[in-house]
Length: 102
Image 1 (cartoon, rainbow, N blue to C red):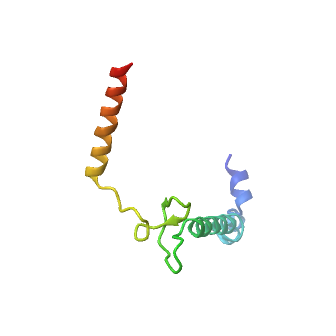
Image 2: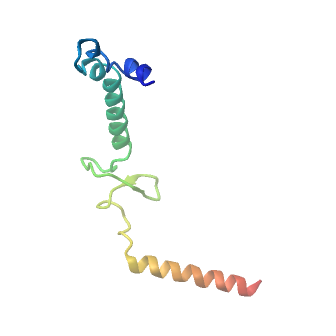
Image 3: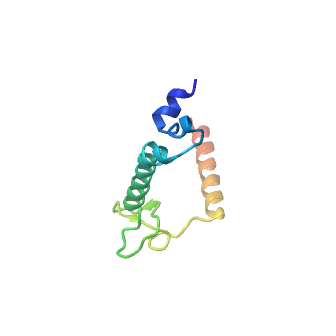
């Protein structure tokens, strides 16, 4: 049942000789997979790093100008738990006020 998968990945090279030789697996399917994952990770990192010269931090947020910036170089500081709670309660008050007017 698994013969087609084992054969197509190259894992059955040593099977006729009574031992497992993973050479074909690592030089074939697995090698292609590892190269693809490496290229994807490096490309993701390259496109999501901070826009400041010589800063290699991951830049999750963007500025108003559309530039990516890390936590060190972003113009707005990180939001704290108190900021999130205040924004949540302000939004609840706006919703209740809007429901009351209509």
